[in-house]
Image (cartoon, rainbow, N blue to C red; front, side, top):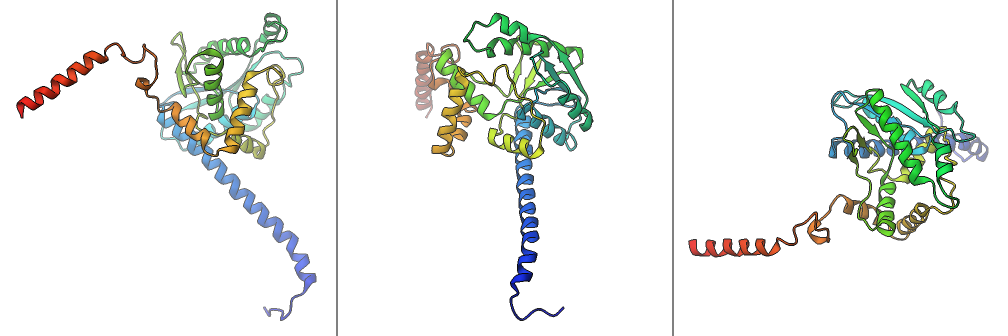
Length: 300
């Protein structure tokens, strides 16, 4: 085809918009693919590092209707297709009977996705509102009641693993909340045996950034259900800690990564917990080491 020997503005203006839109669409698709692969990799690494899922496991995916649990279910389903072990997933939503809760949203979504699921109905909302004093946060009691209901139901449906959607920032927030207000150095482990020994809880999103999860959820257009019971409480210390971490992350890039790494790299001898490290036995250990050196010198 013969090329024009001059620039025609009319032709350029006509072709430019569609080409620009196509280029933008291609870029967005590439960015989404990169995001999805990053989440897949981080979830896969967490599963491998902590041996979260074994051959034949039946994993109960706790689905709240928030961005985290939707993302967890989607990534686990994605990994399930190519996993080296065979495991099954069953989504479970706890309907706590909050006023105005859109009961149709999750069943409609899960039916469309072809996911096995159960809706567990427990009126924990009334209990929480009745037992929580005015002005106090509802999270502690709500969490206990929710956890008890889900743990018991896991046994009923034959699930041997319970997957929760806590991500990296959730773990760091819990670490600081326990330090600031509980006087303990603990967070959320990626894998946990329940106190009664009946359930193993896993957190496949432990390595994932909340910002990545939020962006993935936005692009996937998950039908988000807001939590009106706890998320809107103005006196939540967790929100203050979240804001603190967000400010640090903005001012000091890489700080949250380093902080999370510290959770996985604990040195008990450099802390002060006498139940984790034998401080009283250091003198005996010193004497033993000295005796060993003297013996080595004599042999030489």
